[in-house]
Image (cartoon, rainbow over all chains, first blue to last red; front, side):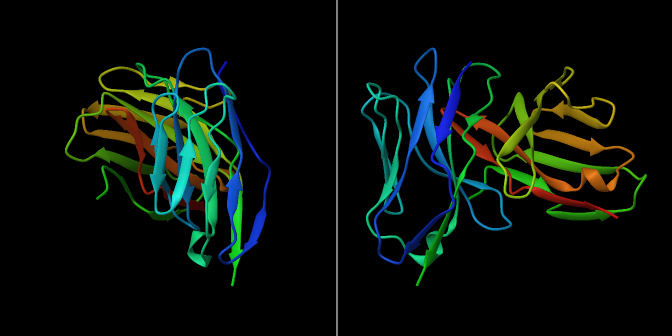
Length: 113
Length: 113
């Protein structure tokens, strides 16, 4: 079945550092790809998405490009802030019928001042 | 603004009692909603798929009689934790699909004492 693999955390960065969180996927079809963010004690918020190959999703300085050739959707941000400290989940869905999201295990990011 | 709303955000109940969590789709009809459970510092575990007007589809290992799911209308799905025990304490979160995006509710923290 479909699956998502994320880099293991936790990741600790200094403020203004460059962030990369790796995400690769396995899917039989052509899924849509998502990054969700979960701040402490809260639910999941959609951060960005891409629905087809070579699409780039972006939001709040974060970017991720749907790479079909490498089956990847790495999350990047040029300069992180303390407020970016959260858990980031990569996920996929074929968006058909009753298919739920398939999640990675999540990567905890801590940004220190 | 939010497109999926959960209530309550926090609930404390005594062992042996039942507690109901509501998940509402705002301004759209959701024939399918998904219920997840999240343990501390872990990823989301799909519990069941809630289908409007029919029985929910439960994931393997999830007790149907303990976690009752009702999807009586196109905008409301409910999860009832019956005869709750401390090990049921967890973060429960629902999601629904809107077009090519999947949104999550704010989540509900359940503490059984």
